[in-house]
Image (tube, rainbow, N blue to C red; front, side, top):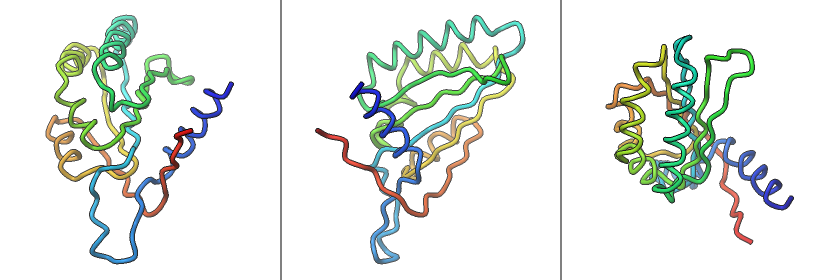
Length: 158
């Protein structure tokens, strides 16, 4: 039960704006050293749901085995659209997302799943370095980075 409470606290905290701003304007540069949330929305072609699920499950297992910087990784189905899915991902920092984007299992997943989809978009929430945002956009994936105005990341260590 403690795990569920901790996970709930983590999700609530991390879905809030994450950037911690100092007192001076010069220190507002995003360093990408804090955890942040990525939401990837995808929509399967009607005849491809089973294949999308199979490929996504294999990708999830590969990411779990190879990416310690991925703190949370879930694949959820849209309750109002059986063809819609959402990846919810929490990264330790921008370097973890850079690693994810270059990880061969992810690259294989994207190559295999893309022809089975009608759409694929990414939303970033929190402090993410400009370099990594640009790296993601360079892939051709429509990407929106929501600019954090304030917030914090709670230390969840026992």
